Image (tube, rainbow, N blue to C red):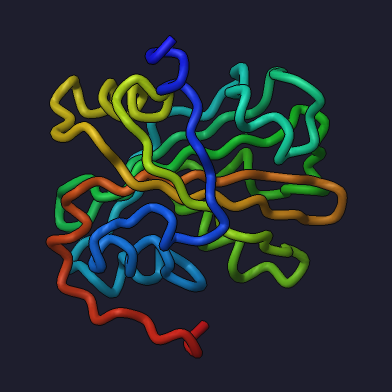
Length: 194
């Protein structure tokens, strides 16, 4: 029973519910584009695309993107790297019913950050951030471990997710923060900055 509970996260509307260390909480609550903050926090930023393909969404992803149950979705996974080190694992799901008119650049992103399109398109509406602690055994942590060649360090990882809407299309981005993000020397973004 315990292993089944690890496979689903409890998502919270407030980062305080996670009791994350202050430095991690600061990263989790970054307003605006996380990509922009990572770029400012490092000498060399890179998106390493792991894949973009049709896949079955996780049970906890279905309802937020308007699906009645687990279904096939378009899935994109990337590692966001700063100065050669992965610091964030990005996982995006889009319902198969979404059209190119809803998300015109999604299929052509390649090694570009999704954030560069989401935050600069006036037709995109950002939903509310949700936060969770993910443990080993959660599907996203397992995928992250695989992406890192089985060398993932730690047992608990902090994550946030958000649903975006463009026209009739929904898209959900989940970001899992690796401990290495805390080594970045960026000045925190103030709340009134966008």
